Length: 225
Image (cartoon, rainbow, N blue to C red; front, side, top):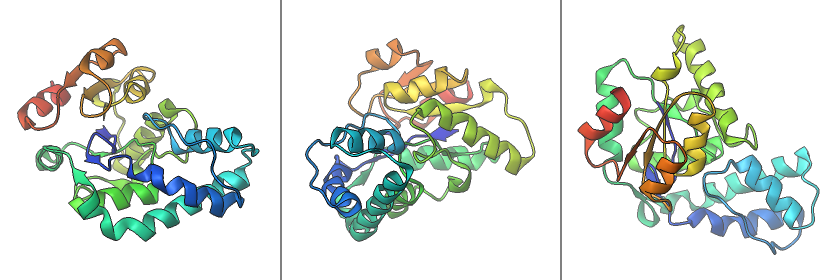
C-alpha cells in the first residue's frame, strides 16, 4: 500500500506554503514573488517551477539548496505541528487495521521530502505502521508516476518478493495520485478529503473513491477487494 500524506492522512491547512518565503530567500537571497502550486505534485516539480517563475535557473545545486531550506523550516516549526495540524479521521485506524493482518506492506508515495514526511506523521503516531525507508518521495522526479515503481522496487528488494500490479494500491486525494496509479497499471483508491470531489477523482480513473477513511471496513474492502 502506497499512501499519500497531505489531505489523505493529515491536514496541515496549507501550513507548508508559509515556509516557502523564508526558504526561498535562504536558498537564493531573493524575495519570493510567485508562490508555489501544490495539488499532489512532487517537491521537485514544485521547486523547479517555483525557481523558474521567480527568475532563477533550476539547477540541481539551487534545487538542493531549496530542499535543505524547506527541511530547516519544517524542523523549526515541527514542535507546533500537534497543535497546528491534525490527523484526518480514520487515518490511524486504517493504518493499524492493515498492519494487524501482517501481510500488507505499507509505505508512502508522496510529493513531500523524506524529512518533512516524517515530521508530518510522527506527531500523530502515523509513522508507526509505515515503512518510511522504502517510500517514493518528492525528491525523485518531477513526474509523480515515477515514484510508484521506485517504492515497489524497494519494497520487493527488502521483502524478497515481487508484487503483482493488482496487489499494489495507491491511496490519495488528488488527480495526480490517481494518475500515478493508473499510469503504472496499479490500483487507485482515492479519498475525497482534499480539494477534489469524488466525481473528479472517478473521472481521472480511480477504481474506488471513498468519502474519507472513517469506515475502516470500507477502506479494507476497497484495498483488499
